[in-house]
Length: 184
Image (cartoon, rainbow, N blue to C red):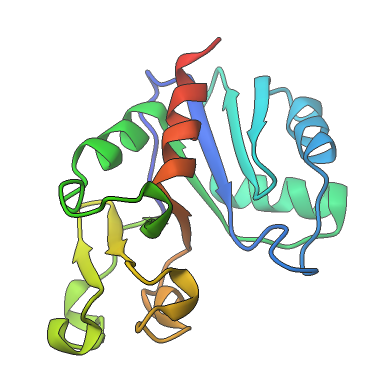
């Protein structure tokens, strides 16, 4: 079962997995906004072209419902991680690599729909990952990639191996999303 947002929250972000990466899963952001607005969400805004939607909701938000909504409207099936505004801020505030990373475009935050069972996660050792650094936080996986994402030493399917919906954004994008959450 995924993360449940508190009923007191009204501002959310939906992070769609794998949208507009290369030629796969193409969705125009205007279409994505219209999709959310047609479902009754308000103050709908998108950030960049990679499936980041900030919106308000008077009630609880369910990732599975959003996945179906987007698929019905666009024909694109994509996993969705839904975060309340406070959860996103907590993830950014708890970033254990903030002092290490000197380029926010090379610090990747993998947002998780739910906390995975740490005992079941297999990953390379810290020494095998060098010069990368990977740290599991309470609600996200933080990864310092000094050589860039394309040179990552983590196996390509690592995020899928977590057993939950997981989608990464670099710190620069996550900060843009957080800034948009503060606007109304």
